[in-house]
Image 1 (cartoon, rainbow, N blue to C red):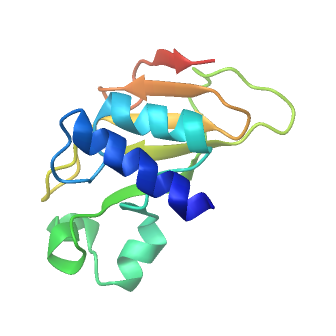
Image 2 (tube, rainbow, N blue to C red):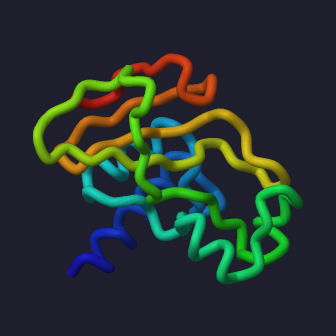
Image 3 (spheres, helix red, strand yellow):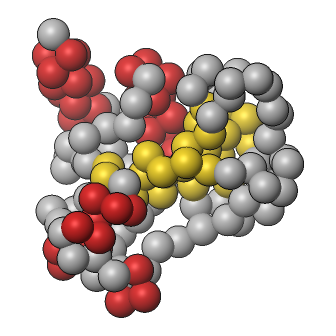
Length: 130
């Protein structure tokens, strides 16, 4: 059932203009997380990427994966810019990745439904869902 829902979502994305089926834009990823509670299938964690041969300092993610993006690792909120709550855990995901070295755009999302966007590598955040 979960796979069927993901397939339907991808079909809907195709109908609204996403020709690759790869979800990487701010609004697409945020909507997907909000709807499904997880990242789209084209994301993998840093460890999963390293297991496939990714070396961050070489910018070779697309050389070792099929156009995957980095996402799903915990975000520490060390700067304290995001709201804290008991049991809340934040995760991060790259946005608008197009191969090579990663940019500073990220979605940061929590296990209790908060979703934020930063385009300046965690200096500031925009609330997308709360």
